[in-house]
Image (cartoon, rainbow over all chains, first blue to last red):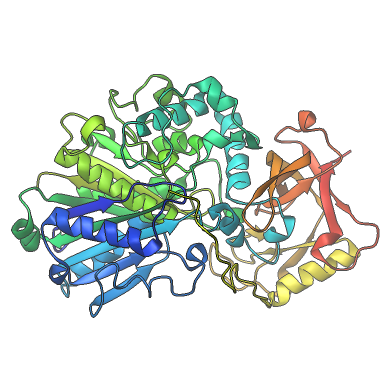
Length: 382
Length: 155
């Protein structure tokens, strides 16, 4: 990168289903919180990236009524209608252009307004795949989960262990939505079956929430804070539409991760970052994510979950915050992962703080069966 | 927090009629269902075969002409599947199905794309990845997507 960029502030709302708050209220809370955290006011922000969805918000140009709530009026503002982590990439590009020194990314989704699963149906090819009726994000993920299980001999119990880890982790995260401190594998396997083998507790919850992240160039970051979190590497990659894709692995995530590792100069990635916050919309996905990130070889994700490697106390903690299974305010979810990774680096994660975090990985995704993926490597040292 | 009063706002959820032009390849694909034919587009350069057909190869960007359309056998291999216990009602609710339904990911013979189709005449217990399946057409085919009712295990 031709300029260094750091995260200097972040905030998120308490994710819930249908909380007594408005979309504008949540955006304000997150944006104001992130500015307060950075110790600056809206005047210090050069450009704002809004992350929201017309379909999800039930209105066209979903950002236009949010301009005041996010402090962007009479400022440079633009929108990303994908995961919030892609919004951070866009904000970085704006800073890298040299035209801006500071940027704020604000993501919001109120899943309670309209089901994200119904919206997933509208992402299907209307002239063919929509006609089948039974295809949506969950059934597509179920087909993928079964293929993955069969190929690598993964059991429902091993997949359920991901839900147990993340939902128990979520219990100590004050911002998480679905917290089940006493969850066990049996309870996961006893939850309502949607599309075999996917059950209710294998699916991320429908959450309402917002998250904001403030970015700054090197000079500005050092003016703003003594504890900047540097963006050391970023990589993104898209795969083809469902019909022309190998569903057995997350190839686009593998490529995105390689790009991020290369930019960050990581030679042995799994030993060089101390915690990962990933977007796992379904529990089997987290196992596939381990493999795509290179934490283990293909098909060995089950070993990591079984041996506790990705537990909070394990060698590579994954989703100590509870991940997307703990709260999924759809477009804000990847942004939350970045904020959580930054928190770990700054030692601000409270009850779920991992000791001695120097570098962290954050992952966001968009699309059926994780079609688009983006990976960030963050670090506390320059 | 007390239960909030709900005021209905007009225009929500959005009711909009969309008219898509499917393009000449897709039009032929759908119309040929009347003759119980499944057409695919074979890229003249790299050979990747798309079903439904496309006008340009997404892998190597070569233009695919109508003469590159090939007729498939209607048989294929089941590469993945799920049993559905719920169905979206179009308003965002998952309704329980009286009887579970199956959806298969199918690779048709001589094609590279995966199509996602209902499975019928089959017990979920007997379904396995790798089994051969074939299209079941409705009695009177009209050149519509609905002409293929489902896929069943090939005899």
